[in-house]
Image 1 (cartoon, one colour):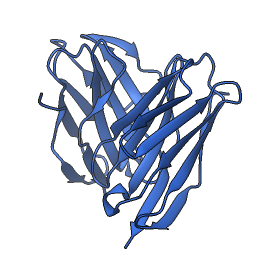
Image 2 (tube, rainbow over the protein chains, first blue to last red):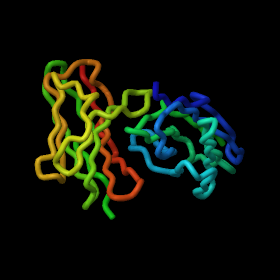
Image 3 (cartoon, rainbow over the protein chains, first blue to last red):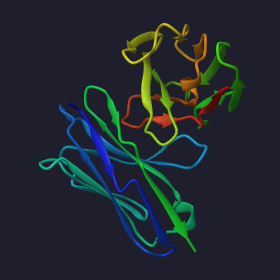
Image 4 (cartoon, helix red, strand yellow):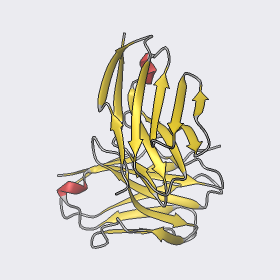
Length: 109
Length: 112
């Protein structure tokens, strides 16, 4: 069964700290993996897109990694800011898009 | 470039009423998606259009949901009649020739 699982479900960190979000998937065939940031009341916004051959991709303070062998991805946020508070959704594209349920991140001052 | 536009942003209706949502994708994007996002969950694809043709509507509850994209540009999603469990955010997204999928702000529906 094609699934995308994210952990943790929610996370609270202090401003300035780093954090890592996890995404495990069982989607096959695999085309690409995407990380989205979704602010409350808004649509998701793309952070990174990685294909099978890409191990890491950065977008500012966001760095995503992909291990296609173990079917795992992580999103690392460096020096968190209050504006990073949002849901982070992992999406795997195979024959269709498979969405994780997201990690809710809260950054507190 | 202008993003994906959706309207209305919010809608409150009573069960058994009808409701329609509108989406205008990014200019030139051939692919348009409608998603349903229930609170605390990831988006679920309802229907995918390629120009004015349906690519995937396998998860669309066709007894009450319908969608069209007659001219291959903007699209409408209709629910008739609405049920309590239809309360959710309805997201429209579009994509062009590249990988990226761009989402609109969503329409938040509350069915009472």
